[in-house]
Amino acid sequence: MYKLVKPQGYFGFSATIGNCPGSLVGSHGQAPISSFGKGPIFMEIRCLWEATSRESSIVSSTLDSQQDADVCIIGGGITGLSTAFHLAEQGVKVTLIEAKEIPSGGSGRSVGLVNAGLWIPPDDIVKTLGKENGERANSILGSAPGEVFNIIEAHNIECDATRTGTLHLAHNAKGAKELTRRRDQLQNRGAPVELIEGDDCQRLTGTERIEGALLDRRAGTLNPTAYTRGLARAAQSAGADIYTQSPVVRLEKCRDGWRAITPKGSITAQRVVLATNAYTEDTWNQVRNNFFPGYFFQVASRPLAEDILPDILPERQGAWDTRTVLSSIRRDSEGRLILGSLGRGDGKPLSYIKCWANRVREHYFPQLGEVEWECTWTGRIAFTPDHTLRIFEPAPGILAVTGYNGRGVTTGTVVGKGFAHYIINSDDHFLPFKIQPSRPISGKQLWKAAYETGFSLYHAGQCLKILI
Image 1: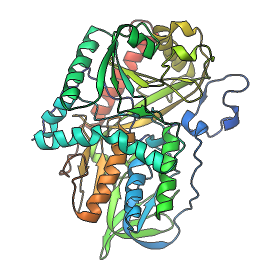
Image 2: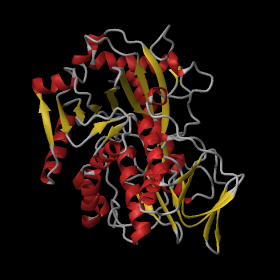
Image 3: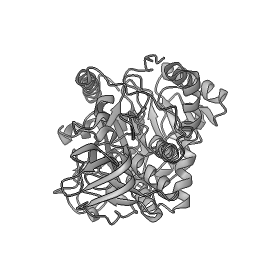
Image 4: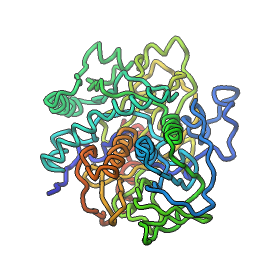
């Protein structure tokens, strides 16, 4: 039986994003990539990770014929590509079709934290999922960063990965108490986490505003666009067929299984994987009923001066705080400061985004002085009311997943591996928990409106210096 768990801080979700639609923001009409870090500074609406990825886009084409496969995967984000890669490695004939380019959704626009576990603490996961499923999720998702780093190493994915951990920052006494609770629960399960305080905390974070930080040594950071492109390259090398600019307009049952129909072609397969997550909009796709959308925006500075870098997250841990509406903080490989928070940035004046970024920078890192903000971008997250993912079979022969609640890099990678094992062996042992019935969410628009309104009001309060 599932139980609703009230989160610690109603809007306190992980800073790693699930899928985000590239149609919200992008590089159309913007200056070329080479303009980054050069010339006059005007903050652009552009995803930093796309502009700085050392992994190139894969060579792909539009599906324009009728083809057969053992497995058809719909969605070219981390989940779909991980599934394709692990299936192709085992000799399965697999075809992946993506509506746009790879990546165009949240897999390339997240904060890029390689986090362990779900957002809610381990004991809450057990209360929500039950003892067996909960502890299985804690174990599999706790080791998920290792799965990501193993793939990166084995396939030489150039995604600027770090393995120095992540920092969950206590912004006040209540936050410190929550981190102590999390530390105890994680250590009871053997996780290599520790609470950093005092001078050690200030050294790791570069700020005096944090009372303590929970360091998780399993975790790390990466460039999510580069990681996703690297996964696509690995899947192709293993034998997977990948088609882009090929949206599925309908999915129909046929004698040989299922047929995914695109504007110019189709794929007939015995099994189908729906890996569209927060980027699910088509009415035929039942995934859309199992999450409600939220958003996350980020702001990146120009590279900081060399003499200040040793004082700001010197070990390049990714971080996020315990605020009601969290702020994420990290650096990239070129020394940019990247801030983020829940809510939509697209559609808001750039002056508003700059005001928010300056307010957070001034609070945490006053020693930086004025910072030039280079770019901003927004992505979408698939939320669920209990903050746990959904793994289900909408119909015989179809697998689906959604609701990563901001932990897409690691969760998508291990779910893809678990899907591949299940398809080949009829065994769901490698999935975070047993496949469950679909659980459509009622009042999706109310959930969406409530979250976005709360986020916007909180950020307005920060800009007006009522809150921080």
